[in-house]
Image 1 (cartoon, helix red, strand yellow):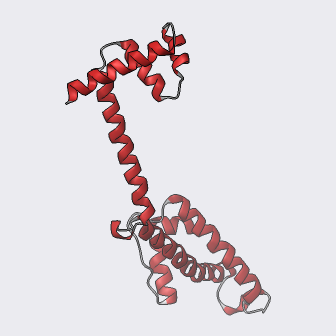
Image 2 (cartoon, rainbow, N blue to C red):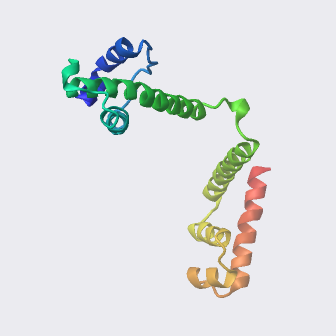
Image 3 (cartoon, rainbow, N blue to C red):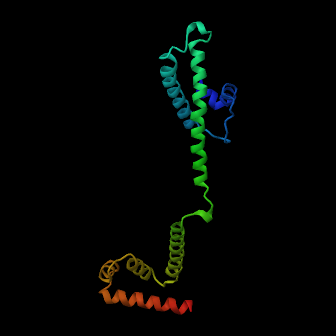
Amino acid sequence: MLRAWIRHGTIYGKAKALTGYGLGRIEGWPDDQTIDDIAADTVVAALIYFRDKVLMTHRWQASGGASLGTFFIGQCLYQFANIYRSALRAELERIDQATTPMAELPEDWFDIIKGIEETIVANDTVAEAMALLSTDRARRALFMQEHGFSQREIADELSLPDAKSVENLIGYQLRQLRKRTS
């Protein structure tokens, strides 16, 4: 019942009628998981309060006119108001942190963004340069060199006689690139 009241919004009017205080709302919040959490926390808090402050102190009596169920539901409404306000504050804080203005971002975030930007520009430049190489063998050689392969390993992979052949192949291609881009 409590979950349905929260989901349909009827609990806000019931809590205000009982406590006199209105509760703030956020459009689309709480979601189903939060509703379940708030409902469970409310029932637990109401049970604890009801046990400690009502039953143990004999505040509720059958002759008082209110049924045990009615008395407990009233306690749930009181506890809901407190638990809901706490959850609402946490959600508002989460929203505030998620929407930090650019001017308030930590300085090191800009270093990360700048690093990503430099990587993208460098990768783009490498891709353009690779497209200008005259042979697939030259592209593979340069690619392997950029990924840390030794010239001997590149020579073996590309069936070249020795490391000097790889050096000559890459050197020639780089000179051709400089000529085309200048």
